[in-house]
Image 1 (tube, rainbow, N blue to C red):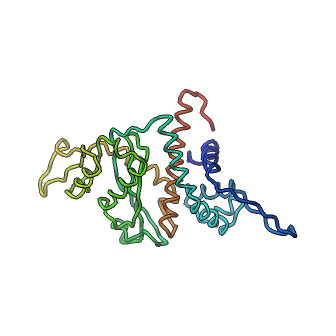
Image 2: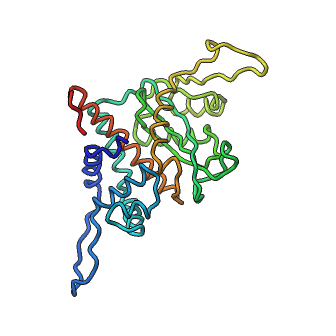
Image 3: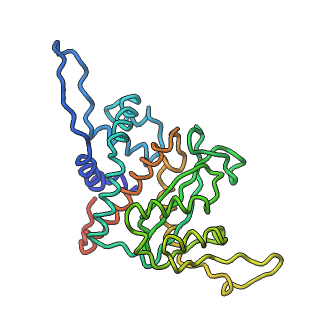
Length: 281
């Protein structure tokens, strides 16, 4: 997977290192304490778990940290806001280098497994009621994520829409949206009212078919939703998202933020290599 390519890993690590909290190393007076596992080793183990979906134990064995060490380091970075700062930096870099295209924005949800349950999960309507979770994501015209929200698998997409747009607004991007594309599940007056209230005048929803009436494709506008569907497919390739075993919403958001950072970094590296006939390995 491209996310584990050495140059991608190095680029993301350099960004992570800039957000890590400063830590004062205190030596034991007898010199008999265990040395702290380097942050770089923990980062690579956390990354491997996200990409493959393996357990903390397996990730720890592949790296130099144990299961407990990796969990503690993840939680330490959560408190320090490392993952939020990381994805914000990635979005800023993409907008500065390539540029976000907010002329056409699409929002859609994606359901996945959460076998360990916990906060922010619910019975999945598409998996025989087994515990699952859902993310709702907004993307620009080329599929770059600009806002997201999570909830249980039983939460309707239209309920997550205000949270998703709120996350987009927190980045100051709602005002730049020209057209918003949604699927037919969002086609109701509550959604239209909320979209209008945030200043989006042009909303395209796929229309619902009339009961018992066959209609042609021309009468059912699909809108420009394929970029967000493609992005959901990219994110679903991460094993840690596809089958998530975290127990708290903040932990899932951290995994989602890291996955989005990887997607954006891959786009930036490909952009830098677009004239290079000898791609890096």
